[in-house]
Amino acid sequence: MKGKLIVFEGVEGAGKTTQMQRLIHWLQASWFLKVGVVATREPGGTELGKQLRHLLLKQDSGELVSEMAELLMYAADRAQHVETFLKPELSKGTIVLCDRFTDSTIAYQGYGRGLKLNLIKQLNEIATGGLQSDLTLWLDINVEAGLARVRARGGRDRIEQADLKFHRLVQQGFGELAEENKSRIVRINGDRPEHEVAQEIQTMVTRRLEDWGYSNNPHTEH
Ligand code: T5A
Image 1: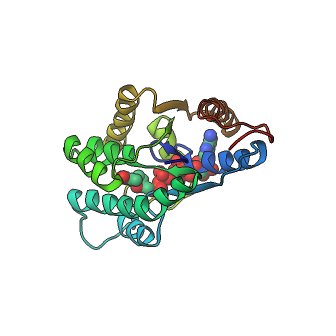
Image 2: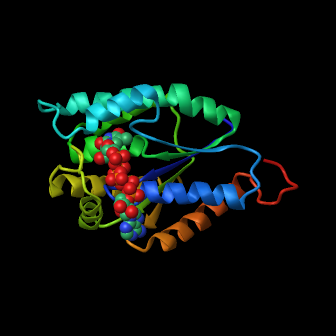
């Protein structure tokens, strides 16, 4: 794989979408990259994924969605996304920014729903064919603060409506994942004004891009 996969993770309302948009604009304005930069998300990064996203998040599905069905739909969304979008983009050398990836499944379906972590890890492996993020930015925010942001925005989806205990378990999941994967997952304090969070992300991404051999000098490679 020649490109790089940068993933944003965190609980509801952590600011992932906001910060991804800021990062993509900053990358395009401040770096003389010879490669493309694209933004995508899970669930919903493909046409099939958009339909799965709708099924997964609609508030009233007419019946209770079983935990296993939910897990398998996220896995199906990911398998399609990896095969038809992520792998082709990465093999062209693109820098891909992705709103949520495998750690969300561990945090939400594993810690939140209580499904077996080993099963989820195996499914992640099957769905991704072993593809991992090169860098994951975990926007760490107090669960209540994130949910308050979502409430202020209006229109909570099926998962956002789950109880506080669920969201706290999800948060615990992200914390433990970050502990276990110190070089891949970087914690960013998301409980601050947008521009401060953006600045820390830029510093972190600059360091990684330099480590990976990218340059913001127009006369060098990449
Ligand atoms: N899911 C996903 C699983 O259960 N398993 C999986 O495997 C995967 C991949 C996805 C849902 O699916 C679940 C997790 C999710 O529940 P989604 O709509 O993509 O659904 O949900 P989120 O990713 O949580 O999206 P949100 O939009 O709710 O949160 P974001 O993207 O973290 O936050 P953002 O940027 O949209 O901001 C939310 C609000 O806060 C404001 C914004 O303006 C916006 O109104 N805001 C700030 N306010 C104050 N200070 C800041 N620093 C702010 N930053 C943003």
